[in-house]
Amino acid sequence: MKYQSQKVALAYFAVALGLFAVQVLGGLLAGYIYVAPNFLSELLPFNIVRMLHTNSLIVWLLLGFMGSAYFLIPEEAEREIHSTKLAYLQLIILVVGTLGVVLTYVFNLFEGNWLLGKEGREFIEQPKWVKVGIVVAALIFLFNITMTVLKGKKTAITNILLLGLWGLALLFLFSFYNPSNLSLDKQYWWNVVHLWVEGVWELIMASVLAYLMLKLTGVDREVIEKWLYVIVAAALFSGILGTGHHYYWIGTPGYWQWIGSIFSSLEVIPFFAMMAFAFVMVWKGRRDHPNKAALLWSLGCATLAFFGAGVWGFLHTLHGVNYYTHGTQITAAHGHLAFFGAYVSLNLAIITYAMPLLRGRDPYNQVLNMASFWLMAGGMSFMTFVLTFAGTVQTHLQRVMGEYYMDVQDQLAVFYWMRFGAGAAFVLGAILFIYAVAMPRREVIQPGEAAGAPAE
Image (cartoon, rainbow, N blue to C red; front, side, top):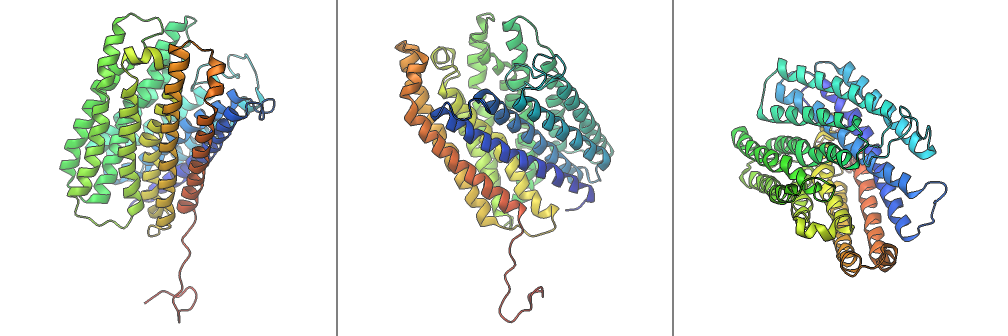
């Protein structure tokens, strides 16, 4: 670690990993409720569990992105962060907002209150006071990192990262607009949800992945930057109009079916380019980096993102197919693997790389870390296949044969049990990962050495 202010990232990563644990445990609980619907039905209803699961996912990913920025921007800009005090203040605001959200959801506080009560819009259910806090924290963050970059060296990585982070913050402002017309509401709602995960988040992913490739492989910066610009151009070209694949059946004009089908089909290209980029950089690289776990997570991120966001997204993005499949378990299969591959794995990769540096140690517990990768990647892949089969059966029975929704759900029970088993394996992997990066490696004392004495 070259700059003292990079230690700010340690606090962000710690809070992010805590919320990661909450998120996966909430997902496991939601998976069990699928097979035992009355479990905790009065104490903690399924809709609350699901809100905690999805909201904690979004918040911990955002904290991971922010921690990544505070870690890599000083190295890229070759100067200290503009203000570490502002960085910690921003984290405090986000933590207070997160606690407020949890208490509001779990105890159903201030129901119906326009300022203090939760809203009914999926993923952005946060009370308005929390959304205001998020905007304030985002403004502090953007000011802090932008001033750091402006006063320091500018690189392609920092430029793309800034573009993605500014876009993330500005697009969140659409969450304040909640029109009474349902079609209009959904149109603007997707400006947050889609343009985040299939737009500006892809810019953040590409820039952080480029940074990791730069550090782990030793490939020249010029080569990495050329790849980065191509990936970002493809992501923006396909992702913005690709929003149309959400507009098929919400009351918007019919031309969106063609726009959405064509441009969302092209969204496979940037994810394939990112996968090719990662493997080509490793192949061209001349550096035998000691942090093998970070390299595994980086390659896993690019690969799983291509299959989850690219291939599984393409499976049901054409409007003729989507007419039958939208809202089925095929959507759940795509969503789970896409989020894990693209953004969860990205954060776990940068945390794996940064944690030893932030704590002043060599990479440690790498075997446990790599075991956690295979547990999580294997569990999520199996879950994706299970949900894909469940969605295929559901599509045929419900959308083609016309059977009732609940009758079909009863016939999918075996798939939901398998999904729960895959979730248990994933949670085990998540716990193993947190232990691997948080706990120091036990020192091995050679025969004849005194405890605490350095080895020859």
